[in-house]
Length: 140
Image (cartoon, rainbow, N blue to C red):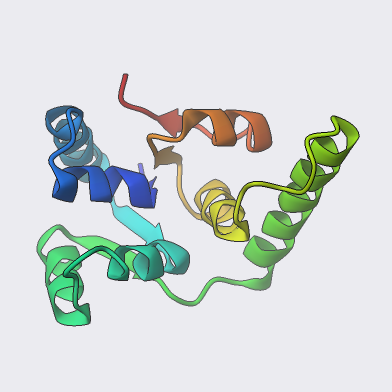
């Protein structure tokens, strides 16, 4: 079983947030159940973490056996665009204004839906609402 990982799950480990033990356990279980992967936007977001360098990030990903999918196909981008457009339309129809999410969240969701069996995330609300067909691995 292949598990995609959202940026917030990895940054929770680095920030030593209260969920660190649970996130660590979920990652270990997912690693043993199959491969771990992140979409290219996750790599980019992780590189922006305070004090992070490309060398340190690459070492972390290599050590933890997390594959970075830098070459995402057209179907990921098209699905992300459709889901982002639905999100934007729903916000406008609800008079909530412009979309509050970044398109990167939708690329991460589309990548997980098309190239993994589940997504480990701490952002359950977004993915339940905009990717109801995506299996989520969450921390309570």
